[in-house]
Length: 155
Image (cartoon, rainbow, N blue to C red; front, side):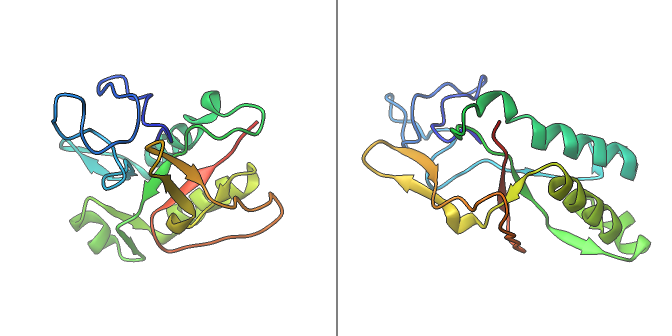
């Protein structure tokens, strides 16, 4: 998620306003932020937990080139729908994650210096039509949530 909504190569826009100059609905805006779900069954291809974890690592690290000098310009927003211990439920619902894989993902974030924010820490500037992170926690504070959450790391 680009906080200024200007980094989506397939959907060009200059800010996070709701409408584009031609009056059509923008791809991303204050009412429609972009997140990615982890579906282990996608396009009729079943991913192993290892493949899904690798995809997770790639996605959460995809924002690093945009965040330099402590300035946050992009954040991965990851959405989890269902967590389960049951293989039956896991195999039935594409958007279900096994608890053990979720724990591995959270451990990766912790061990690699990411900060997990609650969705209410994402603000919207109505004057400039852009998003920002409100009161980002210090790297030493622990914040957890059960909602979709932006995950921030800057170099």
